[in-house]
Length: 164
Image (cartoon, rainbow, N blue to C red; front, side, top):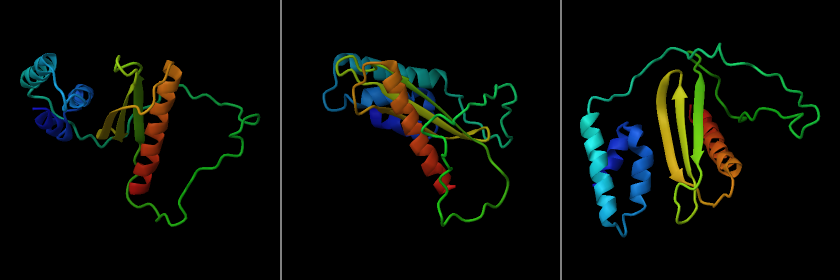
C-alpha cells in the first residue's frame, strides 16, 4: 500500500509526500495505527481525486518582495564569486526563473528527535521537483534544522543548474 502511495507522489501528488515519507519508515515493522493512517491517505486521495499539476510558463511576479542591500564588506563572503563551471555551454532559448522553497519540521519523529526537510523547486511557475526526507542528524534547535534544509535546497539548486 505504501509503495502505491509512493507512485502517487512520483506522479505528482506532492500533497501527501511528507506523510508517505513518514509511513515508509515503518515498512519493516508496521503497527495497527500505521495501517489506519495509510487508509486515511487513500481516503484523502479519493476525496481529492481531481487534483492536478499545472504547467505555467510565465515568469513569477516578485515585484512585491522587498530587496535589501546588505553591506558584505565586513563578512567572510566579501569577495564571493558565483560558481560557474568552466565547460558550461552558452545559454540558448528563453530565460527561466528558478525558485526554491524549503522548510524543516523540527522533532518530526518524536522517538529519534530527527527533523523532516521539505524542498520544492519551480521553473517559472511550474513545479519541477519536490523532496521530503528525514534529516540524518538530530538538531536541538529550529535554526539547525532550517540550516540543514537550506543547505539541502542549495545543493539541489546547484545540481539543477548544472542539469539545465
